[in-house]
Length: 200
Image (cartoon, rainbow, N blue to C red; front, side, top):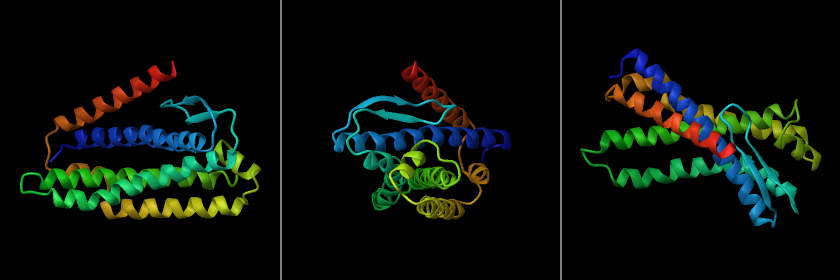
């Protein structure tokens, strides 16, 4: 069982890592949308302290590109998390049972995080048109559609989180060594450094 301080560090590390990875998956959607519609990706901005952005010019089908971000951002993690369930179940042995359960929990937590983050992005865009939502509204998408889709995504994410229970409580109850908190924090620092280097 992790001590309270280590559990909090692990929880914070998981949230940071989820935020950075969520942005990368979201922008991957924009990149795929641009490539599939014949657009050219000029720049991808990934920064730990800013909202990520993908610049596409020329952009022949902006409607596809702008929607590809949140759609891939929600669907890809969901497919991986639930699609891997059968694979993980088939690889369970007495030795790997606990590790497999932890991996699946991480995947489900990240899926919930992506659904909540992307859903909030769409819902907030109903009132403050920024980033992708500005482009969606310009293409004629009704504001209520953004609000409905955003609310649905957030609700699905919260439902997934509810099944996992308290984040910090989940960390605190796991049978693992305190050194794993340091490992998670180290991974976060490496990802942050990589993003800063790529943005430099």
